[in-house]
Image 1 (cartoon, rainbow, N blue to C red):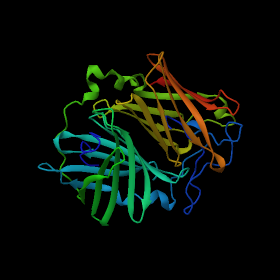
Image 2 (image 1 turned 30 degrees about the horizontal axis):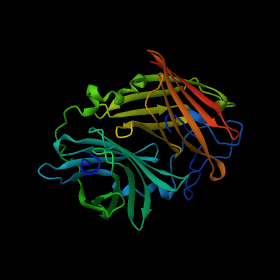
Image 3 (image 1 turned 90 degrees about the vertical axis):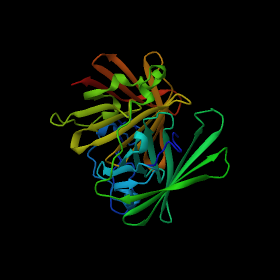
Length: 359
């Protein structure tokens, strides 16, 4: 995406609403049926039905970035590979920068807030970004604000602007603001290339170094899993014995990124990015599925053997629910993922508990 070392050197988790793209003209939105019995269209782990892809025009706004690209970045050119996935509901990036710098991102349009979001992680570990913005006047503009990882004092805002002057070229303007000051930066020029030169692979990144043990707290989830679910969130849903929920969770980018690939009933697919931002030691988790649903969760480091993340889930009439997700290893070959929703009178109620068993 750039040498994000310039600015980046700068849900999930397995959840899905019944969030289908219903027409070619209208962005996806939560379906009207309730899976949890209280008005919210909650259908966790794809239990509410198949994905049908994201056909509305808003989901195609970033398609000009798709392709393989050569990017001049000094003495050794960089390469970027941009692909569409999840039936057109997400865009995936695989950046290979000069000096072996490697990064990946997942971008998606969220019909619940009419904005684009991008989750970027690199093998340097200290500048992961969660960009938010949108497409206006032929430009895709997204930004994120965070404390300077080097000092912990200044508030940095990274802004990225993509434009396509023609079918074979894209310009990416990378700018940074300090404490609300003016943006400064420069562009990267992408040129479409069938077989771009890929720089040599990097050495292992800092996320594998023993002093940074917080990067490894989700290691108990790595592996290939079969997933069983129970709880009110799957009430009235028939599961297929021929298409059980499957999960593959890997550690990537020298241990800086956890990625999950989910498949299930009636063609359900989802991808999940999970990483920790070292400056505040907060976990960040983005879930996107092939019904157009995006969920972003955050939370602190592991406590008492559990990692608990919180966020919001869209539901009917433009409303949202507060949700809490707790991950806990039960033994060497099993872990649980428990989803709960905030009750209007206080406290939490169970939605779905997913039980992962290693294959």
